[in-house]
Image (cartoon, rainbow, N blue to C red; front, side, top):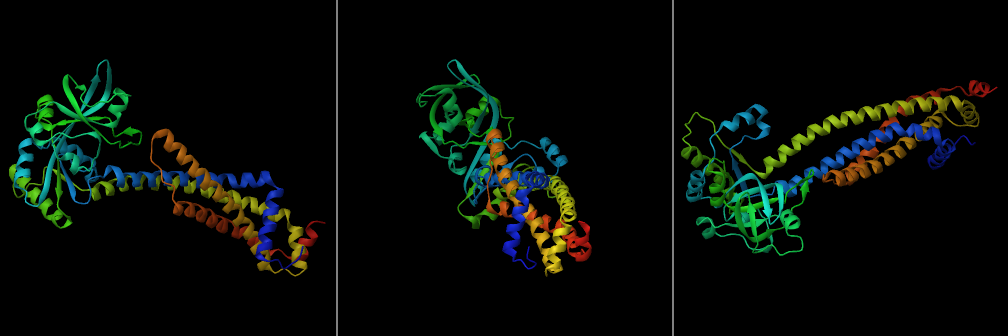
Length: 411
C-alpha cells in the first residue's frame, strides 16, 4: 500500500474495508441509525402537523378573528379552567357587536354541541350540530360541493334546513343524492339543502362529521345557555387592529366590565392559533430530540469503541504505510474518513427509515407528515458531525503510532 494516497482513494479503501466486515459494520451503524431515524420521524411528523395547522386549522384568514368565552391555553391551565366560569357570549352580545362595529365587514356567530344524526334506520352517534349565522360559510372560507347555504330569512324565521359535512353524506347517503332529504339531528327533522367540501382528518379526528343549522334553530333545540363564538371579518388588514379594539370595547360595555376588570372573553387570530400549536409541538420536539440525542450519543460511543478495535487490528498496516512515506496527517485522515463514512451511511439509512416510519405512522394514525429536504440534510449533517467527533481520538491514536513499534507489533 502506498504511503501517499489521495482522498478519493482513501474513501474507496474505507468503503472496501467496510464491505469486508459487514457484520461489524452493521452493528457499528445500528445505534446511530436508530437515533437518526427516531429524530427524523419526529421532525417529519411535527413539520407536517405545523403545516396542516397553517393550512387547515387556522383557516380564519389574515383578516378574520374569533372571540370566544374560554381563555387561550397558552395563558396557563389555571386561567383556562377559571375561564369556564365566565359569562357566556350571548345572542344579545352577538347582535350588539354585529349592529355597531363600524370596522367589521361581517360579524358571524357559531355554537357547537354533540349530536346523534339519523337518516331512516341509519345513525351516526358521534357527530356534532353547529348552529351558525347565515354569513359563516363565507367568513370561515368554506365551499359547497352541492346545493346552497341557508340565507338570512331562513335564519330569522328559524327554518328547519341544514347543510351537511362530507362524512354525513358518505355514511348516510352513499349512492343517494342527499339534497331535499329529511335528516334528524337529535329529535328535530331538517331538510338538507347543501353539502360542504371535504376537509379531511387531523390526528385521526375527522373534520367533516357535522351538520350546520341556523343558529336560531340551534338555540331553540339546545337552549340559550350555550356560549357563542363570534367571528369578525374586516375589509382589509388596515381595519384589522381597529376592529379588534372596537369589538373589545363594545363587548366590555355590553358585558358591564369596569375599567379595573380584565376581559372575560378571548380574542383569537390565526397567528395566535399557529403560535400556540407550534409552542406545543416545540416542547414535544425538545423532549424527543433529547431522547434521540441520547441514542445518537450511544451510537457515537459504539463507533469510537469499534474504531479503537480497528486501530488495534491494523497496527501492521499503519506501520507499513508510515515506513513507505505516509505522514501522521495521512494516517489521521484515513481513519477520520472511515469514521465519517460509517456515520454518513448510518445517517442516510436513518433518514430513509425515518421518513418511511413517519409515512407509515401518518397513514395508520391519520396524522399529517411533511417530508422536507432540510430535515434530511439535518439528519445526515448530525450523523457526520458525530462521526468526526467520535472518530478523532481513534484516528489520533493511529497517527501517533511509532512506525518501528508498529512493524514489530505483528511479529
